[in-house]
Image (cartoon, rainbow, N blue to C red; front, side, top):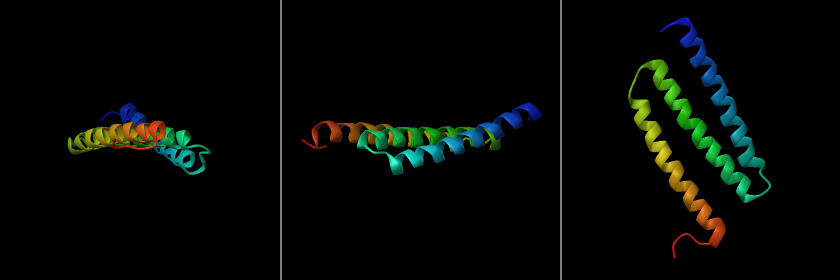
Length: 92
């Protein structure tokens, strides 16, 4: 691994960790439920990307599979919360 790639991956990990912390702040202090859902979307996307960058850094394929599971879970939770906010119920 070259020095430039190593520095870029370190910076990406730091930036994604900071973005995840800011998304957690939005979840906690969001004045409306829609703000909390957007914070949750940002949090799962940052976590997914953090897993991918860490997998690139360590050279292991297992973190890529875990990021796929996070992506599926995040999509399902977003759709479920959006349906709940629109209609007030999830299962009809």
